[in-house]
Amino acid sequence: MAAGWDMQGNEAGGALYDSGPRLLADVGATNARFALETAPGRLEQLAVLTCADYPGFVAVVQAYFAGLRGLRPRHAAVAIANPIDGDFVKMTNRDWQFSIEEARRGLDLDTLLVVNDFTALAMSLPYLGNPQRRQVGGGEARQNAVIGLIGPGTGLGVSGLIPAEDRWITLGSEGGHVSFAPADEREVFILQYAWKELPHVSAERLVSGPGLELIYRALAARNGFEAPSRSAPDIVQAVLSGDTGLCAETVECFCAMLGTVAADVAVTLGAVGGIYIGAGIVPRLGEVFDRSAFRQRFESKGRFADYLAQIPTYVITAANPAFLGVAAILGAHLQRGESESPMLGNIRRAKASLSPAEQRVAQFLLNQPRMFLNEPIVEIARHSEVSQPTVIRFCRSLGFQGLAEFKRKLASGISGTVPVRHSQVRLGDSAPDLSVKVLDNTVSAILRFRDSLDPEAVEKAIALLQKARRIEFYGMGNSAVVAIDGQHKFFRFRIPTVAYSDSRLQMMAAELLGKDDVVVAVSRSGAMADILQAVDLALAAGASVIAITTSNSPLAAKATVALAVDHAEDGTSYISMVSRILHLLMIDILAVGVAVRLLDPAAADRELGKGLIGAVGTPAPGGLGNLISHAS
Image (cartoon, rainbow, N blue to C red; front, side, top):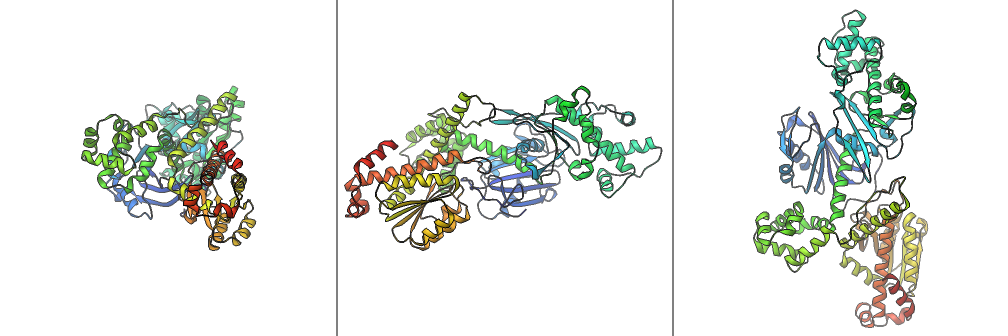
């Protein structure tokens, strides 16, 4: 996949993460796959490294880092083909072992999450669209319902996703080891054949890669002839090449058995959200699987046939589904962290500008914020391996007088002066629950916006607007409402003001601007080609541009002054409601700032020069006063 493409294989835009790219990895026994997620769903710099070429996990990640272009990631999530229980990881099929915390420190990461690869696959399921899955048979998934997952590969993985308020919970399961249940005379023979080799025949013994080979041997014995030894990949390839003999019968029997297992998982979990099939074997079979007895067997459940007929079954066809899963896990983890304390997010972003000693203090704070809050300065210095004066310098570098003032701000951020959190609105929410969630989400976003606001950029923007000969607001789609609101507010200052929501009009108007004219460009993503072109024309004409957009976006990079509004919303599926509210608040901040300056003659003389009020006409005091009163 080329750089700048999303997980569906399409060209990707979207707002870049303000904390920089995130590392996603899928580490197996043979290969380690890496990618940088630079914006929601946008992957860049994909690479596949051979595990045998490296002595351990840290070494293979460092090798990927060595080839990166641009910023190093600060946050990472890794899916690994191994059980994960605690901090220590010892891989089963490779002689690698490591401590997750020591690896995080060695790789200089703020966050390192390591999860089982099947857990990551399960977490990807809610995010799979039609290009990444193929439905086999009928049925329709219910929203916000339990989802089942089975994965026949080297073994038989079984898992599920359970909806819980605003998140999904993965189900840890060893369901592949349930006893195999034959459904016809042929499968009874295969079970009896397997008993000659195995004391207990679980579903995994037959519905897996090794199981495919066992079925092949059993059917050869049943048919009364000796067949050449074949591996599971050889059997599959023979069928894909048109084999109609023993290999075809083996695959057909395997698919039918898988139908039984899938049905058992569906009724056990109540997986009316659908059953997904992943791992290595089934996706390779393609249309052979679609034509098999799988779906017929899935629905053959006696009294529960109608129940199962309504449950859809999907084959996962995504190239790297584990990336979707670890991206979701990492995103949720970071969102929880930032919702607890926007101040910690600000410290992460400022860390690179600190001295090496101050960075050690910052790292201790980021790792143990509550311990930092409760410990005296001597213990903070000891944990950070610095002197006590360095702790004070750290606080002053971040704009505080000393440790006491810093801790007061930190306590407010960690404890939360307003008890709000992000909660997903779900189908079936009552009116009171819906109201609380919408308001809590908005208040939470406003508080984060308040703590991340750049006062210097706001001051520069107000100064430009004060002396503007003409102000034009550009916004398209959802941002057009914000542009119109800005025009209504600033027209009260008797400054010629207009709002354009049509791209052609924006470009035509931009060419007519000149010195002392100001364009306020509003865009959630900051990546729309039309508005970027209009901004280029305005700048070329000599006008200034104030951008209300996400930080690190193309629009922010072009602007004379960029006012960052960073709030992650899925604009492809939903109207960006909270982002729009934040943009409207930014317009209010600018309008009130200009109003205060114009009502203060001394400030107007200082900032704008004498004669400006007369040039634009005396502002209507009542109008400005009403504007300030309304905003307050």
